[in-house]
Length: 237
Image 1 (tube, one colour):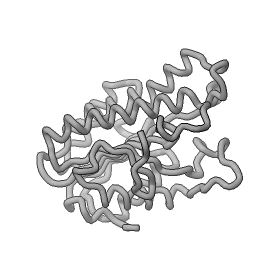
Image 2: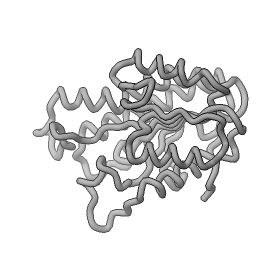
Image 3: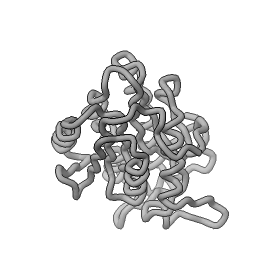
Image 4: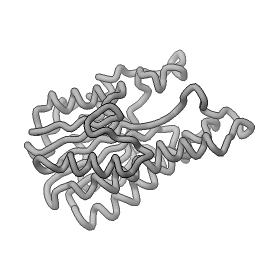
């Protein structure tokens, strides 16, 4: 496992969105330790500028701010929504509620593609640059053998398609750049804790971040548009 980002040109900026979450914090720390970037921009609802996934203007302001120093070489989207006090993953179609489904799609698909809209243009025209968003294996259609979790599965599947589509456009404009969806595994954070079970491999945020950084370091333009797990193995669509 690589412990750095040696394949990314040194200097420039790295950006983490969702930097206040458990995995976002760990990813920010790992990127900082790599020493590869002149500047690390950590964005969240509590940052300055603040971001809100459902407020496109806030994402545009953050992108303008992040573009101010050096070439942007890495953007990691560590946002995501699985559950809260109002909404739990659905076990059956009987549990489906349109408003809850709409919120899942807004936070897991529309928000991230708006991040792509505003942050992918910041990549330089040449040299490796990476956009990585956190998807989930349960968003795989081919790997769905258990059912349930309708909104989360479908919204992550939508995210995967949006990543794939954006990667096609990105390749035309910046052929050395990479745009991918990553499955971090089950991470010991408030998002996944209620659903951990015996026998399930669970990583600490720092270990999960180290794996993801290693995968990002190994990815090249030929892998752009792909969906990979924390081992770097391709996940079925």
